[in-house]
Image 1 (cartoon, rainbow, N blue to C red):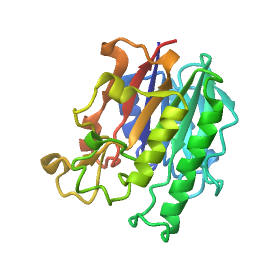
Image 2: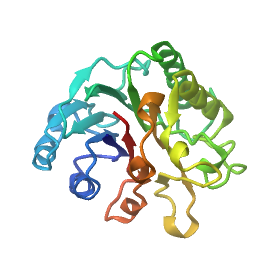
Image 3: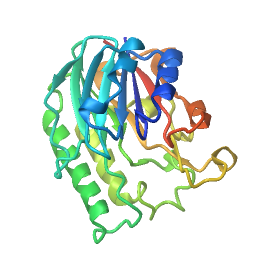
Image 4: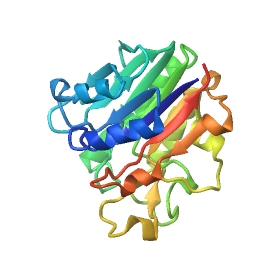
Length: 263
C-alpha cells in the first residue's frame, strides 16, 4: 500500500513547522503540496529530509503558485502534462513504486464567474486541458492525480449547493469540466468511493469567516483521484480529511487529505 497526502499549504516556508507536525502525526509515504510560494532553491528541503522525506521534487515559482512532492520512498521526476497555457508552476509529476503521481494546482479563478474575467477564463482553459490530456493518457500507467483542483464538484461538496451555483468553484461550467476530466481519464474519486454522498465533505474554509467551526461553510476543493487498479484499499486505511489542522496556529485555509492506494 502507498499512503499519499495532498495539502495546499499557502506558503511552505511560513508553515514548515505545521507541515512537519502533520507528517509526524499522519505518517503518509508521500506528501504533495500546492501553493508553496517559493522558488526551487528556497524550498525547505532540509526540514523534510530531517523528517524522513529525503526524496523531493519541486516545481517552484517566485511569489505565487508552485507545487512539490516529497516522499519517504524513492521518487523519480517525470514530464508532467502541460495543463497550464501560461506555463505557471501548477503541476509536478513523479513515479513512486511504479505509480505515477500527478500533483496539480488549478487556478482559483478570482470572484467573477464570467469569461470577461481573465482569471476565470484561464481556469476554464486549464480544466479543458485536463480533460483532453487525461483522456488521451487513460490506461497508460497506474496513476494518482491529487491536488487543490479549486472546484467542489458535487452537491454535497459545498455547504449550500443552491447558494453557491453562481459562485466560483461550484458553477456548472467548472463542475462539468472537472467531472469530465475525472471520468474521461478513468479516475476514481477516492473521497466519494469511501465516503459516499449525501455525506458532506469539506477541505477548505475561508479566512473571511470569523469562526469557521461555527457556521462550517466549507467546500471540498482538494482531491485524490486514482486509476481503478489503485483504488481497492480497505476502509481503515482508505481515506481521511485532517480537519483538525484548520484549527492549528496560523493555519492554511485548506486541510490535508490522505488516501491509501493499492499496489
